[in-house]
Length: 215
Image (cartoon, rainbow, N blue to C red; front, side, top):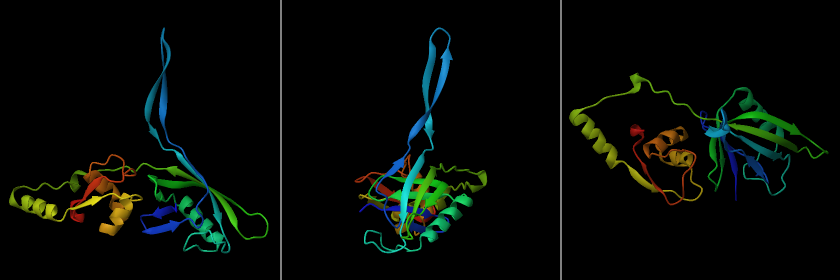
């Protein structure tokens, strides 16, 4: 069964949507630039990928129906308050759809909720904006080691490296949680394995899981 999650990695908090939406919409594309050349006219040039939107229509139930996910809290405003808190604080989250390749960083751009009838349930339209994580490397973080000490550390790291074959539904976040107890290391594990897109891994591929100190 497909499930959808929002994960606040800074607080190690995982939110499973109480009811999996029947449908979802994810925008993926690239920017284009139009250049006008004399005697030729306009030329369109493809640019870099833009950060798209993810739109979800959620049902937040106030009572059990039998189709909600395990762990559902039957207080719709619990979820609304959480979404509003993350939106107002500009919290960077991770959005995951199980059994798919959807695993991306994002933030909540807007939340619109409504109620109808007297059921107590709420409907919420959630818009997520994809977010690109920027890395800043400082010279002070670079450590140069030579001689036998560096060789010994490399040997020790090699001994502690595990080969892992990716299964259906795996994500680097989940793998880091399993082996390191720290989901925030997913991007470093991707870099270690020369994975260009940390949100995109494939069933059957093998990756190396080194000692945490190596990442």
